[in-house]
Length: 449
Image (cartoon, rainbow, N blue to C red):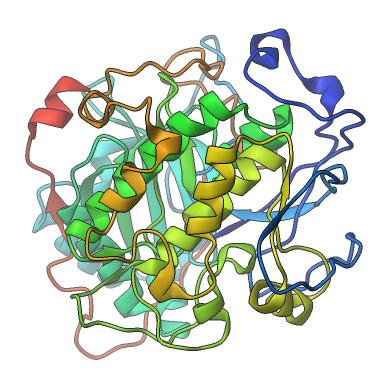
């Protein structure tokens, strides 16, 4: 994951393009947020009262300000000027090359030669993110005009954290999904020191970037975004995959305004009898069963979808403020406050998705996601047209071409396009065998090429 800081995102920055799409409460203050689960949360919110059940409330305070959020490695960042004279950068610093002797370099090249895609096939344009194991770059495939996002992970760091299985699982899961609202893996390969995932470059910004820059989404726009997310999550579940880290930072917006689900670093493959008791995800979006360390299944994803919808409609997640322990207690015990300005259909859907008992949660019944798709809040959605991308979003992000990085944070795009030195990874047999992949053409990819 990547840690981001967005500040000064106030109602004064709402542009005319967005005003018809947003529902802004009076006196909306600057909007910030808490961090990924490994970090301490700032105590910027007042305490919430503890009540046993969901109920509607006509009183609702202004959205609070949260300064730190974690977001997807593919998440946002400035626009490349057409006049910018880009050099031909490398993913290796000179120090890195000096550190490895010629035999090491030859060994790395020999790994590349066995693969259909080589590191030399790509030209690096910009840094667009940074995570625990490396950086994410905007790259161009040499000999073409195709722009991709290249996620680069250092093997030594992956092995230090004992995350080899997570990395392999992310790659394996991405090879299995082909859906109009999920970012596609195009290539994967490795060198001696690094792992590479080459994905579609989505440059409309992530949902968090747009939500907290602009304000709240009106129900009609939130309905379309939520429907597309539900469609994507349904596809994952149908293919035996739980995402387990659904949040606005992992929902990207394409230039055409459609959502694209990304970041499968915490995803898990499952069957109907699978239960997991690992505590993973981003705390504000964790279901009660995950927080309590009880066995969880795909119903945890539907809880996260409910939190996403709540945040889109109200401006902040329902359980925030304080350190991790306080937030965990709120998730387990606190009731959800539903403001009166929401429709009764939205109230009903939120209550169904944010049911603390996973067995009673909407989407957990024998009909699975059809329970959600058939809810009356979605009565205006034609799901066949939705999956065919025939429903046009009412909001289009401001994107000046496929090279544009204006919806990404400048602290990433202003970084030099070189990678940090990597130590020789310590393992016997290579745990990343068969990591290489080239995505075959598919009807969806051909339509959207």
